[in-house]
Length: 414
Length: 185
Image 1 (spheres, one colour):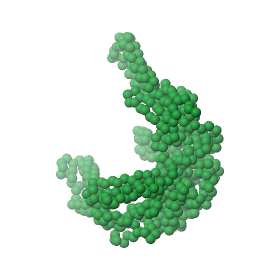
Image 2 (cartoon, chains in turn yellow, blue):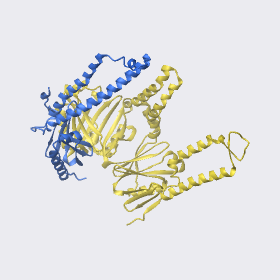
Image 3 (cartoon, chains in turn yellow, cyan):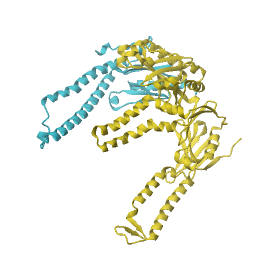
Image 4 (cartoon, chains in turn blue, brown):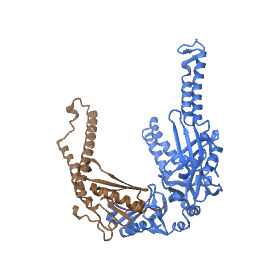
């Protein structure tokens, strides 16, 4: 059965996506200079008198030029989905023409930025390994039709977990490490003012406010209304965001490792944060910002299989010597078997477990620093596709030789 | 000092002596280290001298060149000893590093041993190799050496400083092995 090609233009609001800031700035500038000119009257001094017809023509010309540029660039932006190929053309001066073969597509996500949400439009992101093709703006109907056609899957969604806002707020407040870090940043920012009493020293805050905002308030906004949905066999989608809604789709075939983080004050609720590292993506992405451990285990079961869940318990603890190498020696551990490698680490106010399927390990390395050499310890790293690594740190020399060998063997079993 | 370096258990292979790099790599590394230390000490020295002169000029309100550099004492010449001692230490460590480094082509995997202060031993299955390159820098070319870089999905590894002929053979051998052992994707 051949389907008719799906094609159309982007939403007419598209040119505004980047240029609204410029237009707003120009309008602001024009308003600021308004008392420099006077229109139609010649009684005011120190003003340049502009006849009414000149003013009208100037405004008309400017509006006409801007509008015609918008309309031409909108008319030139065109997408079409024909068979196995998605094509996108746009550009007035610099022509852009992108092709994408559908069997390279890893995930398709619909996002709604705040500005787009006001207009009822959205952004379609087509993720391939290494690159992302973004179509914005589209109407919601266009985006849904494209997504359904690209994925060619029926969307029998099953929601696995939804984060309650109350839980999220409590969890973020109890995340001691991050909160102390933002307090420290605020302290550094306010410090010069406290010491000197000069008001202008508060300008240092400008450098710290974005970072602090990112660590505190923005997390609340981006993490709220978070849910994980199973959209097809082996595909899981996260939806989140208070003002701009975002989606990300994880495919089990691309999962390199899963991390469960637990800040120290979350222990009494037994909450964890779940992060997933995907082959090809640089840093692990958040799968769930906060959830009970049972839910996290259910997700590990979904993403990696039933054997993996058994591996989240009973680590082999680090040798006693490790206490001379790190403060967090009691949190260290690893476990290898049944084709899964799990490691336990401790940081300031936070513990984490990382689990990966052993057959997706790319290379294995043993490393030893000068202090470890005196203690007879070494680190064993399993390097995953995409550059992140799963590490069993501070093991004895004999143990690390053994572990490296077993990891290597497990990584080549097929 | 240097000759007492012997790789110990996590960095050794059972019943296998790893291939050593050519002896002239020591020389290349010593030249590179000399250039590095010379450059760094010139930079740090120049910055420190300018900074001190500036502070001195501002604080003493010096007018002439003579007054500007009046902070200078003959004893400061001994500061030259810092890079010299550093280089002497590096001189010895480079030899030790050469004794430690090595590589070995096993049946199914490649072993690379590198570093000295921070030691590293990498095992890389031929099946995971995605790309093999031979590169050679100006000092390496002068001493007829080349580096084989091996990329997998997890990043880069390198067999640094081997004969160009060996490098070409390694490249051909590794690409051949990678093709034969390729895992089904």
